[in-house]
Structures are given as structure tokens and as C-alpha cells.
Length: 163
Image 1 (cartoon, rainbow, N blue to C red):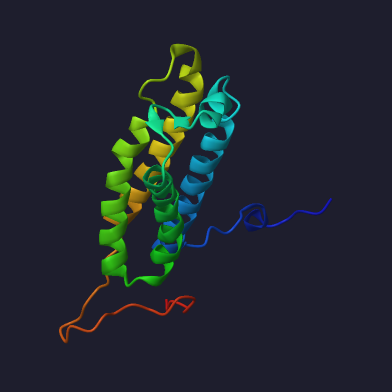
Image 2: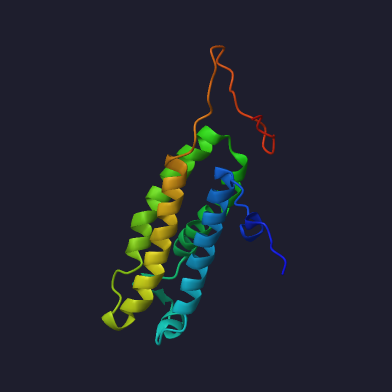
């Protein structure tokens, strides 16, 4: 009988940079947002309304379509911005944009019937949970330690810690 060291059963959990967490959360949010809209097309009467030039209570117009594009373009851009902006700017932009998407997300339930409550509760609940992850991750972004000279005392990613 052979025995394995206890450490062989444990998987390493490498720290993930905040930027990557934010980009992953925005990617999940965007995909969920798009799929909820796609699945909404299966709701009886939706396609007939679109064929008649109406979405929800709004006439389909270039302004409405531009608004819809902006609603999905912003999370798409947040994936890139979360990875490329400097940390201070990224933190601020993530806090602002995620905060603005909370009421937008809740608005998606306005005017819906109770028979669709489970669909909207699940979709909106998941979207709000992802936005909460974004807000928490951006809010709790770790600060870089500074020494007496004002220079940061951070080790490069992957550097070994002396013990």
C-alpha cells in the first residue's frame, strides 16, 4: 500500500489580480444580459410586438436601438477597461458603472407578469449578484504599501517571498 503526501490532495489557489476578477465578472454579466434578452424572445407575443415595431412600451427607433446598443456595449467595454486602465481609474470606473447598472437591471422587471416571475427573479438576481461582486472587488481593491520614500513596496507578480 502506497501513501501520498497530504499536500497532493490539495489544489493550489493562486491569487487572481483584481483586474482579472473584474474582467471575468463583466464578461459573465454581459453574457447573462445578452442571453436573458435572447430567451425573452421566446415569450409569447414578443416577436409579434417586434414585428409591429414595439419593444416593451417603446416604439422601435434609431434612438431606442442606440440605447440598447449602449446598454450592452458598456459591459463589453468594461471587460477591456478593467484590464487596461490604471488601478485608480479602473476602481473608480468600475464603482460608477456597476452602481449605475443596479437600477437598470432592476428596471428590467417593470411591467412583467407574475407568471414570468421566476425567470425575471433568477435573471435579475444573478445580474445583481455579479454587480455586487464587481462593486465589492473594486471597493476592496488592495492598496500598495509605500515606504518612507513614497515608493511602493510591492513584489512583482510571481516573485518568491523570502522566508
